[in-house]
Length: 156
Image (cartoon, rainbow, N blue to C red):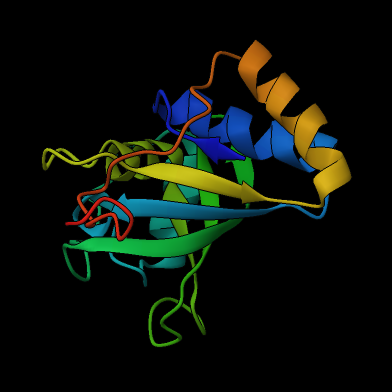
């Protein structure tokens, strides 16, 4: 099920929660721009302060390019939500796992570089229709996004 947004902190969390409730085995594969993410190894205190709603100075991103990664879940606190990222590069975070504010993930999906980001919800076929229905009801755009990659079928 391809999801093209809209992207903000609330919709990122909603996508994770709806997917977990409707298709528990679903893998969320995000296509985003990494320059909007925090660096992948922030101190624990910074993450806890974010969850408590305290003002923090985020670490600079590790890089800035279009990238695919998966979203494993989220954890919330009274002041914010952190998204659990499984990166394809094990040198990032802790063996490829890192935590990102939902706002940063939303900005990374928005990209800001003239291209689109999105999330592919990979699930069992019997769950796909129910998941698409729930996501559509929640206001998500269910379509493929244009990340700027040439389409092999279009002659580009």
